[in-house]
Image (cartoon, rainbow, N blue to C red; front, top):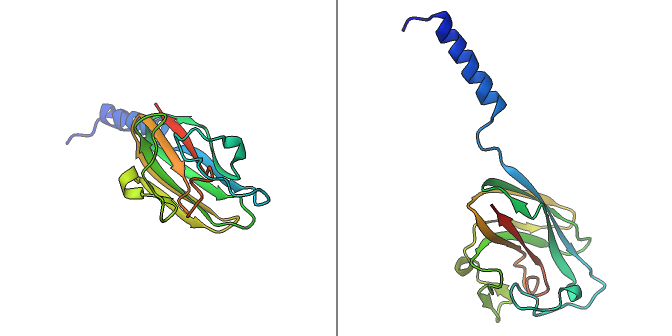
Amino acid sequence: MKITRRTVFAAIASASLLAAFPASAATTVSVSLWDKPDMDMATGLGHGMGGDMSKANMGITATPKSVPAGPVTFQVTNDSKDIVHEMIVAPLKSADEKLPYIDSEGRVDEEAAGHLGEVAELDPGATGALTVTLKPGSYILYCNIAGHYMGGMWTDIEVK
């Protein structure tokens, strides 16, 4: 291959463009896992169940709530002072979908719900991260420690 000024210029221009537009940088979602231990444990607050979420004594806050399709990194913090929490990502088919729930175990059937990944049990104050590639649609973030999901520990996000 003959190296010319044009070849060198093209190589420099290509490298500059790649640096200016990195390939598929992940969008970051900040996730807070929280609880109010001084409140009685709520029940029946799972997604699509129409419960009074103002009675939730635990929850998940995600910022932002809408992200572009592609790689998404969830930066998760357990803001509890006393309780272990986790965060699981699953797709939602509809805005009022009820996740498959195993009453006898007090938790969601993760496999049936379409588990896409998780930040497993985080001690109070601990952090973790998860990066998944998401297609356009609705997704739910939930804690699957026994009783937490029905206590209101979930939120949804939209991927566009």
